[in-house]
Amino acid sequence: MENNFENSLYELENIIKQLENSDTSLEESILLFEKGIKLSDSLRKILEKAEKKIITLTEAEREEEND
Image 1: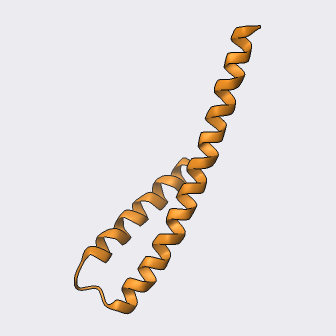
Image 2 (image 1 turned 60 degrees about the horizontal axis):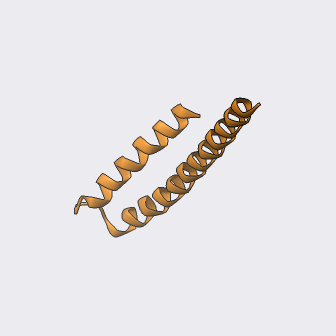
Image 3 (image 1 turned 30 degrees about the vertical axis):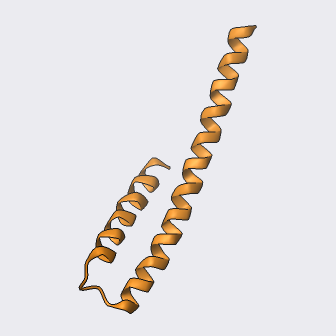
């Protein structure tokens, strides 16, 4: 999961750099923007899953401490 996250983040950063480049055509910019949105959504889902796992683990640890 981490490797996928890191690779997707790296790819998104490259897309942002390309979009900031004034040499990118409008058509290419639109395609890059669409790909960036998909990557951003994928990254958000990965982060949400990780957050849920952390919450579950910390709650389980607290329950163990209270026993």
